[in-house]
Length: 504
Picture 1 (cartoon, rainbow, N blue to C red):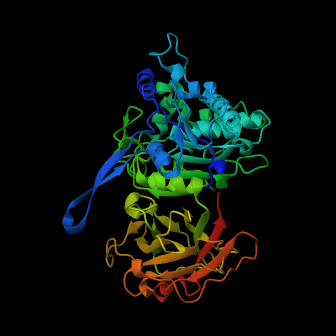
Picture 2 (picture 1 turned 90 degrees about the horizontal axis):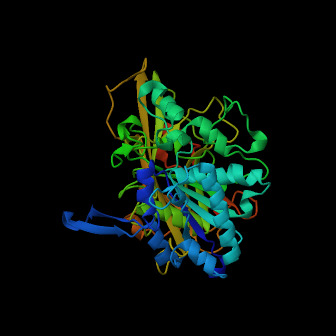
Picture 3 (picture 1 turned 180 degrees about the vertical axis):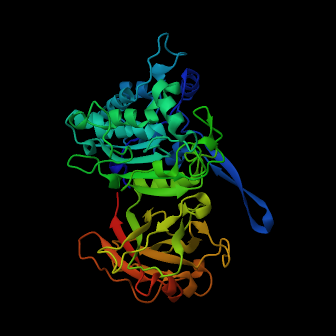
């Protein structure tokens, strides 16, 4: 991407807790976004292989040429330079005024003020860089600060959020608040009533206050059908298609959350945020087996960074959906789940992983008799970059979608294990998709691994091209039949619908 087309990136960190936590945070020049991680993977002959992730801050500097500009502080740099490169990274240091080590009378943290200060930083960046908008990248509560800006602050000022923000990427943000699996709601009520370390901001009433514009606000509190996760689609609202939510599925590496053990949140979480609360319905999302924060958390992960990089700078969005499927009629209560993992050629990590063992498989609802008008079940979305997703000499970007179907059989609410084979899928195959790096269109090819001879890496796409079934300009749509082995489960008409849309 040319330098002149780059947009500034603003990082917004998460919840720091009490004054001691805030004091610790402000000592870090980059609020933690400069932290990386190392880990060991098993290599040939079972030898350990070292892997290093430098941090999202440094990697964007190394990979995308973004600059980290500081002179006695980033604000000081902006105040002393009239012209700043747009390809630059900035930290929203909203906690500084709340630190007792810096201020004799520190301010009490208020999320709305943090959102207002974010707007001031954005306006200064637009003025100094000449860029029309910025990208926002947020961890945990930082995503709520960004949503407060987009959903309340800017609408109250009569401004269109897309005039100053281009995309929003969130790591483990509690879009639906934070709830606990224990206490029957008592813990949440106590937290919201007395505000333990300011944690009432994760309760529904406070979320309603800072996510709702004045024109729609009810002083009596949120309506019964109000959901904090929702970003309304209306004229002048920030489009959900410009939002990406990275969802963590590993609670084990996150030991303490708001003074409570991570077990209080439940296994179906990243240790602090439950999986269902970590995304905005209608936004793009991916699931990775990482915890909420810490050395091995979402922000310090190669998986998170690769999703971030391609969402911000990729040139293709590819969506895969299961369509025209049916399910077999059987005695008793039978439910079906799909497990997914998505890999992009050239990367050492899985970009999206939805497994039953990680508490996030795709539930396959039984279609009503005769099916539904669209009958689409979203499976996965991936962003690709023509310069990143192909090896030298190749003209295609390749990714693989591993699909497994599992059945759960019950009788009167009790699982039946008489003929059960644990972790053995009823269907298991990999769809290999090749997308041209040029203008896109009818050059897309796809093949199932069960029909590919030899290793996938040696596979050269050939045969019939998938035809464009959508005449709309700029969007390519094609369908891939499932292999015959899936027919007894999903019916002979089931297909994978692929759509390729230009991105960025």
